[in-house]
Image 1 (cartoon, rainbow, N blue to C red):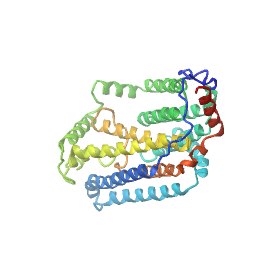
Image 2 (image 1 turned 60 degrees about the vertical axis):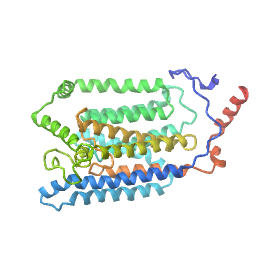
Image 3 (image 1 turned 45 degrees about the vertical axis):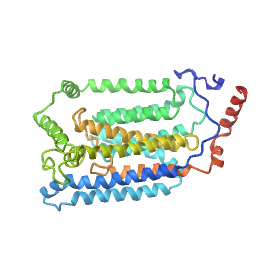
Image 4 (image 1 turned 180 degrees about the vertical axis):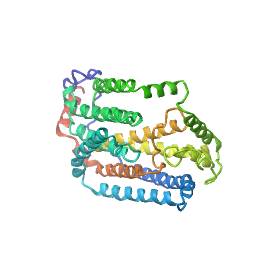
Amino acid sequence: MTRPDDYDDWNLNLGQTAPRAVHVQPYDGRVNGFVFCLSVSVLTVMGLLCVYSASYPAAIADGKVHYLYLVNQIIYTMMGMFLGIAVFLMPEKIIRTLCPVCMLSCLCILCADFMFGKTLLLQDGSVWFVYLSFCSYLSLFFANREDGISNIRQIIIPVCFSIAFFLLLLFLKNFTYAFVFFVMTVVMFAAGSVGIGGILLFVIFAMVPGVCRVLSDPDRVRMLLDFAMRGDLSVTNASQMVLRRSAFVSGSLAGKGLGLGVYKNGLINGISGEYIFCNICEEAGLLSVFFILVLLMVVAATVYQRAANIRLINRYFSNLITGIATVICMRVVLNLLACVNIVPGAGIGMPFFSSGPQIIVIMIECSLVLKSNRTYESPGTSVAKLSTKDVRSEVDFESQNG
């Protein structure tokens, strides 16, 4: 049974929404935060070790000290931790104010990249800023509409911005980045209580120009056809695919030992970046890879659990960390699939492991997840966070239906 105000004229579920609970269950986020911090710390340390093991042959070949790229990665990590601490201590009001500013700044830079043929925001380190800024904007937009969304006119603005970002990524010819952005946006729309009808409309509006853009590029069509037929465009790419597969299985279960890999000696391109998991499999073995994936799943699970538990207390942070977890999960899956040649590799790095400045944004995102824990209050004050209208409507609904 539904209340009259649950009906809307475009949601495909026809208003069949379950009533929300009046009282928020007390939840202690300290255990969740400890597990999250421990998992992130272990992944960060393991990532530094793997970067060093995969990059020191390249540093020696360039005539540099063997720990050069490790030092660079440590500097990026420290920068990310410093910025993360600043974000953690920053008042939530300031973070909310900066959301549209950062989103518009990224949009302007992407437009400049498109007009002048640059790739300022299309590197693996900088594209994370695009995801984070737009995720923050959508989180703020939907958090300010606690009464729900009942018609398409209420989401015209985020839909237009979403399609603008999606098309810019497509026209800049980075289809993998555009795909990650598309999935993140769909999840954010779902987290923002947009109905199935609204999500389908966005998918249609985004997929039509996306498909047209792919089909209008002969090189892209040829690449997709060759990949679907398990072919490739060149002998060089084919040899790289064979080498990546060989490295992935050469370590067996236990691996050859840290530092004893051979494929990092100039055989595989980008082995300290997007294909670092090939070196991990060779040196540490499949058991270590399984352990890393378990840690990543623990990180994602704790973030999603936290998002669900603060849903009625702080919708902004609930939406934000949901989007953050989705982007991390997408990048992990795509990176693994690229390493085993199931999908074409296109610069998608492995979170916490691939070398480069992407670790800066990861540290900032981790600080935002930890900051969401500060929204928890004592059980006696949790209900006060709910709007008066929500509480009154729930009480009336329960009294009418026994």
